Image (cartoon, rainbow, N blue to C red; front, side):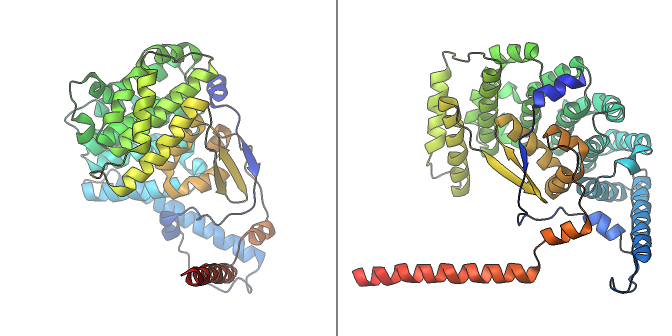
Length: 427
């Protein structure tokens, strides 16, 4: 599939500059351990030259540690390989390392292939996640395509292997969807990935295995999430065939005993309706009224056998889904990172953000600021270049946060005291 078509499906971003928020900063646990350089003079006593030399030394030490982790992927001990995969996962999710990985991508790809082939359970699951992060670091150019093409058959093999570990299949479902979204250049790759993922979550809709969603909820969720992510970059011709037939496999998933699968199925249905509106297609099927009635039940459900937090989350999300299907209103969400913020103003945009957030974890904010691929996908433009003074001015000190929180606490206490006094007078 041509790259321009993928960019057109993603659409322009709705990003704007915003005031600095109080969000958590992206973690870099592995690199912070890797960068534990010797402690020298205080910053006030060091000159610009010594600071630059110190930073360079820390960077070199971090790279040496990453090379060591990559070498450990070939170790005979499964425990050592898993520890190396975990360290690489933390490093790749918390920092942009495209230049470091560029000349080592083939070596790392071969090592990940061995982990997927010969490893078991947790090792395969970690290898799938690291592969996704490697593809994300390489981007949508030839390097990313090369990584995806080389390991796509293996990902499909593990995903469709019923004897494989559920965690490994779940990770491969996520990797297949994400890598295809990032790096697939041909329509055939996109269609084959959609078909493979659909085969994982669609059987429960036939009524042949009603307990499958309960037994394999996480696997079905990963497959459905990846499938819905790929819908957002489908060309109109193939998307119309999905809208005509296959979306009807989604409503039965609303009856799953897994709250995560119910919610994800509801969000995917809303996404399908949104994509149909973009194509000016009519989804007024005879089952649409029945679907809305089912959504209303989920939006007001109060069954005591479900957990209270699950009921609250389900009602909130299905109210938004029902409102969108009935009136076209979407509840906009604001994501703040650094000095910027972006707006999730559609189901397609929300699905894309949630997919990347699940892979990157707390590192999503760092990548939104610095990763060119993510900034292109969300229409954020080139990364902002800020000098040290601007960065320092944007940060609030711990003491200032303490003063603000203390003042807010006192104001709340006074307001509540006045209300309590009025209640006492009434009594």
